[in-house]
Image (cartoon, rainbow, N blue to C red; front, top):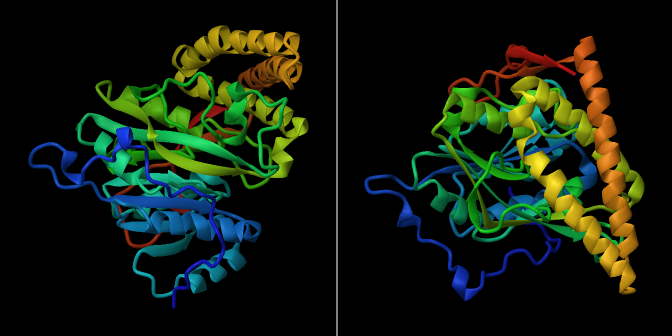
Length: 376
């Protein structure tokens, strides 16, 4: 029997301001049926048990109901058994093991392979979605050219507030929307993976997430798997439209360990390694297109703002300016090393072939049978 979580989730399920009234479900084009959503939440540790329950509960409270929620457990039999018992008999939640190699990308691919909805949305296991999250996503898919819609991710700092030295330009370090991204509803090169949705057909066109790029539990925090996927989608379908609508909001927990400069440095270095993989796969022109504008416009403005705040005696100004410089240097170092490894022929990464939806996840050997794309 399914039990309702007894813990308190963050104050995420709040009505939007009057000028941001959620769209009606009927906003899809003439003759189109309302979109159906499968929400995939990849999980890996019992340490996030209450966060996982809060994430599921936020989906159950959506104003636009999801068809189903899939909890994909990454090679943790104890967690799988506990979640299966927790949601036993629930028609709206399914639990299943990651059918591929360990890591976030293979977990997502496992969920995609069995998804029943025509839209697959992804929510981090330590995040909660606002009540109209799926409704804003659904409005984006009224245009049949749209193959992906992402949203805005706000941090919930473990300490209760942003560290004074932590620059908003680097909120991507903690999986959140950062200063420099365009506001409103805009077309983008790529959506951000922890708050994103894709048409199920996009994976038939371009394949799934590449394994070997994204996160693997608590190991080095690599990323960029959603960037590489989005570029593959638009290459396969040049007329495809990818959107971010910043009214589709989730709230993401930032644990205390990620508020420290040591994690900041590790994550920016790993981002450089990941960007080298993406550039190897899709070319540096497209793979670093957004990063060039970010590095030449957004970050210098951030350093100037930090220096100004320091000159005016405001808290954290020098720290933010210094963190931006340090972040650029460590990311550049990671990118340079990643490029050297790529030229030397390092570990390969694989793009999974996604078949037709099934009731059960594909066998692990099937999940591994993608095509080798590049070397790290």
